[in-house]
Length: 193
Image (tube, rainbow, N blue to C red; front, side, top):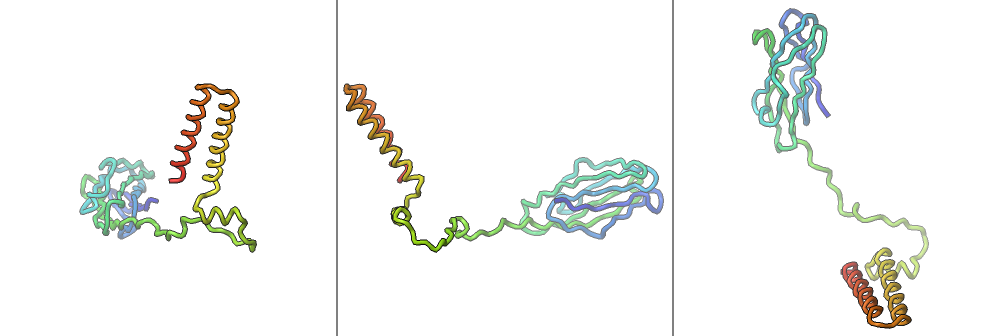
């Protein structure tokens, strides 16, 4: 989210500058809005102090239409700092005859939210019923229902392969059973380890 600062240009007289705030405190980028009151103006902007290290302007010279507005984005990278950085945005007009300085303090972006480890585990709703036999087996074995389902499916595939090889006979059928059983064993090993 950007902070916005308005600098009024030519409001009281030609080449006059009046900022809407005395200073700016932010954690992100700043939009400097140059608002012309009357005649068009050429405005020069620059960053001063330590603000130059973490902020950037697209260009330094801007043209403001008569009774128009020009937005000057000041891109700030506050993620890279650990302590507040102070500097200023300087705005000049009338070929440097008139200038105004807006002090800027950039505060560090706060670290992420601390999350307790208990949030990573799903909560079980108490339904008032005692756990079933399958629930007791699952909780004591440490295996989840998905793992057990894959194990049962692998065992079923091995049994079907063995029965098919016994019915057909021959070295090709036996090799097929060996491949199926080896695949099921490898899958179970990887799943349970």
